[in-house]
Image (tube, rainbow, N blue to C red):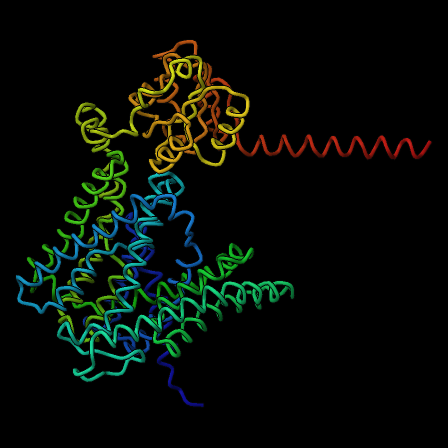
Length: 578
């Protein structure tokens, strides 16, 4: 039996060192991803000792990209993106433009080509969705309004990057690199740019149309048929085969990147009722190959860049951590969102990750960017990811400072914002003895409908400006802003309200809302929604009025239904026995 075991050796070394350095990174309060990149540096050709097979690592990294993009597709919800479209869509596109321009200016100063500068700037402009999701989960703010904006913003960045990955090979010839056709073969310089673009976009369009028309029906149906066998391993195999198979077919037949193919595989499987189970079953394999991807990226890193080009690296880190963040902060404020939202989005974007590595590798393979550029991007990523927890921590004192400087915060947030104040046309009888309803999500919507049905006046306080705008168009009274800030409750006329109803899942500001309401209206009644028993106990200690815990109310409703039905069955059965 031949003993060529370089594949096994590479996987064993990558996973073993990945585990060791990932563990050390988490003990140092850093993302595990930093450890995986460090493991790659250790087993890469740039450091002494054992060297893994870089060619094989590159192919394993491609599978990692497929599975990561498949995971992004599985969690990609058009509804979630639509809810925050007015801030995420223009914000992300403008922020990418600003960061790309900064990167291009830096590359031009260093004497790089236009194409090299463009790839470099784009690589610095896109943050890591993986790093962001983990940061938000750790802080318990993934489902908060600000968390949804940050995720929506990064989803838009991902979509823009996917488009760039599709167009870059076709445009490479015009940008001073090697143009390649849909199958990766070099093309001659005489090929018309518009023809190449038309063919590329035509192939991408055909693939997307096929996936949306046929894939959305076919793949969920196949998943359901496999699930009916009751075999767990067959179900997992089906999910992985769909991810890798669609990604491969998209490249082989349509010239679309593995990344885009896998993303659409996730998107079409999301249509299935079994999508949650598909995400769960494929998670261990996705995580394992994500580790292999980050380790293989680390193997490409040249540590000498730290010593040879410290000023260049400092400039790169400054653009990632400061330039992008300041641009995002100002853009969110220009779009008339609160300073706290702007700080959250800024902190979320102060790093780069997986897409930057994919862009850098593509730029290098197309002859657009020098190898030094890839090393600078990798070093910038490692440093920015390591600094990201500190950036998130820094937002807290900044929030407190803005809280103390109320006038400055108001100037930032509420300047000429018509949605921050109730229109003068609202009848005064609607602003006396009314219900102030905080939050217009799934729970708040139902409460509002019930109040409207009974003719009870109410004012909605909601952070999502799109919802407030929509409510006003429908003739409801609503103000935009975080009800944890006194100005928002004052605008809702809390001083003359009969009741404060807090229906938002964001329990962080509940006590502040109640304190403000009671200070302005000592006789006000309060009704609060909460998810946790511990939070409910704290609120009871502060006499927060009526408190409803989601799970308890659900259990109460189900129990009442069971007891009613069982009473009917028992009484019916007893009658029959007589």
